[in-house]
Image 1 (cartoon, rainbow, N blue to C red):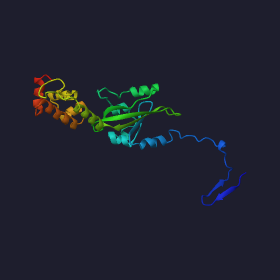
Image 2: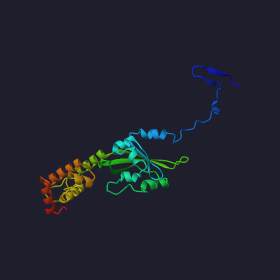
Image 3: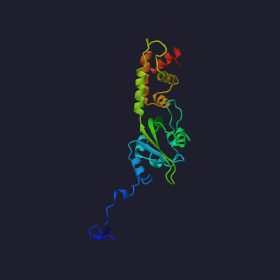
Image 4: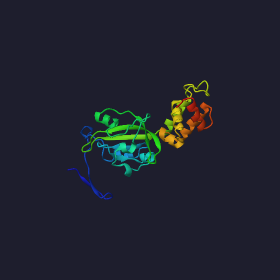
Amino acid sequence: MPPRFWNNRLRRVTVAREPVKEGDRPPIAPPRLGEGLLDQALAGSGDGVFVIGADGQIVLWNRSAERILGYTAREVIGRRCCDVFVGRDADANRLCYQGCHVVTLVKMGEPIQTFDMQTRTKAGTAVWVNVSILVVPPNGTAGTLTIHLFRDVTATKELLTLVQERLSPPASDAGTAAPGVLTRRELELLRLMTLGLNTMAAAERLHVSPATIRNHVQNIFGKLGVHNRLEAVAYAHRHRLV
């Protein structure tokens, strides 16, 4: 039996052992999910993170998610993610619903590409988020976990829209109703103006910020050669733009 040594400082008995040969050393098991390591990593992420279980209910919601959308973990844990996000794509098609395309691809074992969607904060503000998906396979009694990482890309989306519209080819005569004078988005806004919608209502309808609406309105005034909304609406009716 190997000799024992008493360590007065640590107050414990240690046993001297023979050196272990490299070939006799047992393999070190990797850390398993579910021991807090994954939760800690996701909680400290700079991206917004939420995790759903196999039933579609949210089981984790980090501080960055709260910062982006305004909901606390207490307010969303246990709810279905489709009820919290109600996300839509650029064409206003709904992306979030029970059994959505993400859930379908997870069940099929297919990879899920990063995608953009528009949602709303707790205060009702429209925001664009870019979403990435990670899937954690079943581990013991725990079922499949689907990790959603998202970040706010609203400013980038609006900037790209503005750049695309500014790069549209100019019309030969801004004072005529020639096709292509107004961009698709400007025509859409002009139609809303004829319906009497103000800046806030138009922003709500088009899912953009009021500042973006004001920029569009000024572009419309310049292209049509008018000075206010009333003149723009009259011009639209006179030239059958709406």
